Image 1 (cartoon, helix red, strand yellow):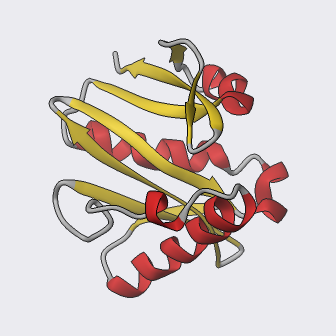
Image 2 (spheres, rainbow, N blue to C red):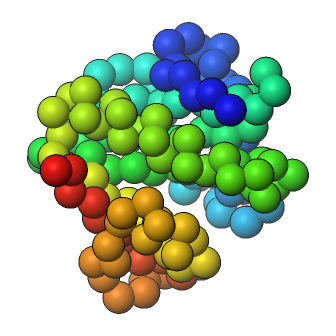
Length: 144
């Protein structure tokens, strides 16, 4: 599996398609909630694509709120979820954060993924809250 930072509109459209399949169609997130003003190519938000056997299968993005990198829109197409590829998406986003000298990242993780994020060094930082009808928690990681 490889990840690459998105640099073209075509790559961004591929990421949007993956997000639409996972979040809008599968998880029933309203289309108007899934896409926002950060869904463009600029320095305020970096997007990545994840590939498995040369097929785009996942995506994620990072944007900065003050000095904290917020990992968002992390998803993998359903048929590829059991392959352990999510670690590569997180690693790709964390690499961007470190390259920008970011010392702390956070994310709103779906509660079923809490254990996955714990294994990657994230700590639970909130009580459960609802986001688009799905239970979430805030998780954080500080880089040494």
